[in-house]
Image 1 (cartoon, chains in turn blue, orange):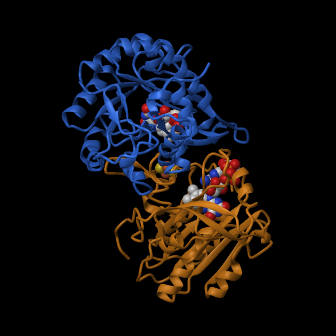
Image 2 (spheres, protein in one colour):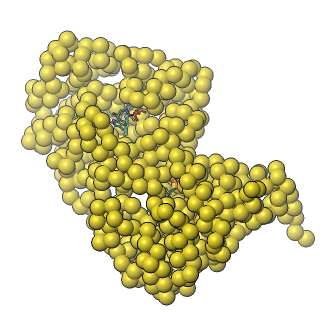
Image 3 (cartoon, rainbow over the protein chains, first blue to last red):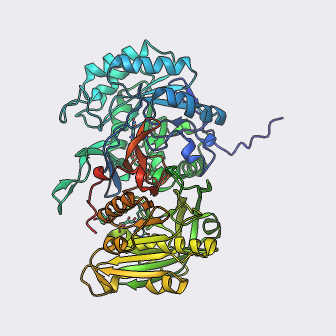
Length: 315
Length: 283
Ligand SMILES: Cc1cc2nc3c(=O)[nH]c(=O)nc-3n(C[C@H](O)[C@H](O)[C@H](O)COP(=O)(O)OP(=O)(O)OC[C@H]3O[C@@H](n4cnc5c(N)ncnc54)[C@H](O)[C@@H]3O)c2cc1C
Ligand SMILES: Cc1cc2nc3c(=O)[nH]c(=O)nc-3n(C[C@H](O)[C@H](O)[C@H](O)COP(=O)(O)O)c2cc1C
Ligand code: FES
């Protein structure tokens, strides 16, 4: 006889083929490769760990200063510093596999083919349970972005093309992460869906800038950076809601989630799962409290399954 | 003296805590400078000199990030932080009252290496950099019964902090002020130069970037060991965000950047690319 307490709500979700025991993952770039936070809590309690963006070659990232605190958030211009695919496979994956926590491997490439190669090699190595293609990093200078021009995900044709190429390289669940710096988020979201994405991740950071009046210089060496934290939450919630109106595939919502109530907001707006980002900097074990708090919320409101609240904002 | 370049101190311990600590006291010690004593037995027991902690200055989300502060003194079950009010975060910190609780993450980073066989230990502090030195001086005296040389530099007489403390500990103390109101009129490095560091000496420095660059140059020329405690804007404080990097002179394992929070804040001065460091903090 099973003795599962029936009063504990079901938290399990399935996001585009990825089963998560609860709807909470970490936002890429805010959680290292998981091990950094295992000193504060057992990361195997997460629905999944999303890694820092992985590139084919190691990247040194931007020059410092890379961070500025801003009202209720921060601007960053890390520039995708990461260990590169080989070191990720050799040094980071064994820890995550030992933890038996699903891995969402976030990837970044300079071309569609690079993304495809990353996805293929991650799948071959058994080093990912889902691929999150970061088509939206505001902090790297490459061919597509000369002086504030186009991020891949600002161009629906490029989203479609990149998604198709990555799709053909892997059978893993494919998530496409989009920038909020667009006129209408539904367009790139639909482009991703129609090209074979299994889910979309909303939102990456918003482009921002801060200037020191004393020195009259930008506070970031990169001049501009990506804004994150509670300051961007209402924008993120609205984008999730907008996208949920037109998408059939699930959404992973993120942007300024600090507490369980914030996560519930995203779920109500239509996200199937959420990612905790910058708040982990402030409170390394924030995700744990958020998982527990979602469960408490469901109990308090008489729901038996987290899926019952997805998209259920009362209009 | 060993030829090995220390990237980090051998004193690293991997323990981390995230605890609500009770404020024992929080008193002004000089104009816009305060000392907060916190009751945190686990953190105090695990901390070593030169390490730091991240303090949650507000329960609201503004300011959003914790504030890094090094351990001024580590006397289990308490530890002290000495801070200067710079902006909103430190202003909020100055308003904590005894008995209130504050969330502390730590101990973080790598502290000062404690090397034996050193002829003279020379501690050089500029401005609020003095916050990093008392725990180090206590450790050197305790371990080696050493008589550290201490150079304290500040803008003016009122800002010279901990002079009496170092003297009582048995250190040999010299002061420099920008305006000449106390001790030597001029720079910390003037006094360091007079001490003529040699190859068997070890210099420990914490202060504004121009001072540390000058100390690094001076010690490099003399062959003395030199450890510097650096600052950077931090978000996570523990290696995850890659926000706090500074440029190193050479690549290590394919990596040119070192993280102040995890690889530091204390570095062997030879590791740092001093040319690449900005003087933004015009302290
Ligand atoms: C490892 C480490 C240990 C530190 N230990 C101490 C300490 O023991 N005592 C102490 O008083 N301070 C220490 N600092 C600096 C301290 O963290 C900052 O002064 C503090 O974060 C400023 O917060 P604020 O909200 O008051 O000021 P903000 O409003 O954030 O900034 C006010 C001004 O201070 C400058 N500033 C902000 N952060 C820093 C920083 N990290 N370094 C240099 N300038 C900064 C800003 O550029 C701005 O001009 C340490 C920093 C680090 C990285
Ligand atoms: C310091 C930092 C680094 C980030 N690095 C990445 C990255 O490498 N790849 C990526 O897709 N998103 C990256 N992001 C964006 C986050 O994953 C997330 O989309 C964004 O920060 C919004 O969530 P938040 O407000 O909860 O932080 C980064 C964000 C921050 C703050
Ligand atoms: S502060 Fe995040 S890596 Fe150093």
